[in-house]
Image (cartoon, rainbow, N blue to C red; front, side, top):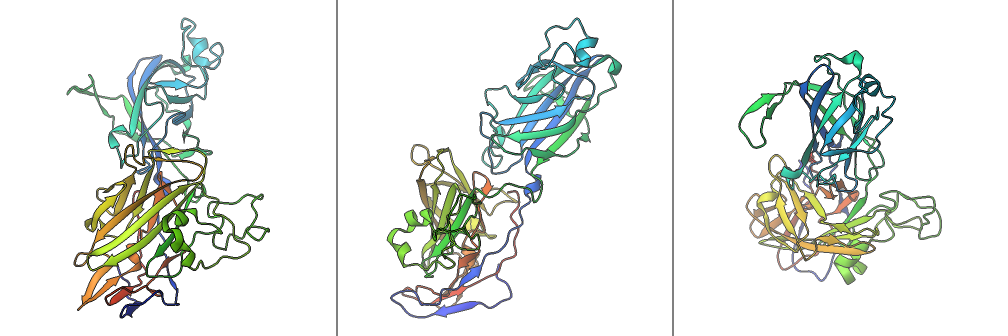
Length: 456
C-alpha cells in the first residue's frame, strides 16, 4: 500500500529516547458510502379482493455495523392513498388509533366496528418480542430483520381487486434518532415467492411486491459522537483529537476562559490518560492553545502502537465513555489497510474477528461476557490489546534486506466505528520521525494510502 514516494527514515543503533523531530504523517481520507445505510422495507401484497387486501412487511437493518436498540426501536410512517383503515395488525402496533367514524374506509364499511387503526398517516412500531431491536447484519444477520402483516380495508371508490396503490411519503426512524431516514420512492419487484406454511417447501407468488430503501442523506448526517487520538512508541508527539470534534455549545469555554477554537487540539484526552498513564506526560501535544476545549464527544478513543520487534507489533486501544448512559454490549470496528486479516495473532480482553469479503479488512470487536461487555457511563472505560504477526509481504511491515525492517504508518487503523458510528479521526498519525529505537536497525516508511472502506 505504499505510494511512489520514498519517505523512508533509517535509524541505527540503540538510543535512550526519542529524537526531537516529531513530525507526523497525514492521515488518509476515507470514502464511506453512508447514504445507503438505514432500513429497507419490503412490501408484499398477499391477497386482494374488491374491498380488502393483506400485506406482509419485512423491515431489514442495512446498517452493517450498527444495531437498532429496542424501546423504542424502529418505526415506519406513511400516508394511505386509498382511504385505508387497518383491520388487523399482526406483529406490529400503531401509535394512534385515529378517528374511526370519519375515515373514508370507515364510512364506506359501516358494518366494521372493530378496526385496529383508522389513522390516515399511521406510525407503526414493532409488536413482536424483539420490541423494535434489530441486530447489525455483520454481527448477526439472522436477527437483522423482522416481519409483520396487516389486513386492510379500502374506501368504496377503490373497490377493485386490481387497484393496489402503494402508500406515499414513507419515512423511517430508529431508536432516539433526532431526524428520520430519507426514503426513496418505492421500486416494484417481481412478485416474491412466499411460503404457504412457515418452514414448508410449497410457495406462492405475492400479488405485488415493492421495496423502499431508507437511509441518511449524503452530507446531512449527524455530527460524530466519538473521536480518536493516536500515539506510538517511536514518536514523541501525540496525534490529538480536535477541540469540538463532536461539536461545542455556546456555553463551552476554552482552557483560556474564552471561546472554543475548533482549529486547535483538544485540551483533554481521557482515553490516552487511562491507556498511557505516566507515559502521556512525556509526549508533545501539537496544536494546543488557550482556545483549546474538550472534544464534545460522548466517546473518546486512543490507539497506540506500544511495541514492535522482528516478530510483529502490538496495538493497544481504549474507549472512554464520558456520557451518563452505560453502553451495554458495546461494539467497535477498526478498518485496516488491505491484507491485515492475515496478520492478527491474538486479541486480549476483547472478542475479535475480521468481517467476511468484501469487507475482510474490517476487524469487528465486542466486549467479553461477564468481563467487559458493558462500557460504563460517567467516565467508564474498556481497554484491549491486539498483537499482529510480521509475515513476508505483510501490509505496512516488510523486510527490506539484511536486518532492516520497515513499519509504515499504515499499521494504524484507517477508521474506527463505535456502535457503528464513525469516529472523528486525528488529522495526522505518528510517523517514523521522532522514532524511539530499540536494539536493532529500523526503517520506517510513511505512506499516503488511497483507500475506500466498503459497507460501513
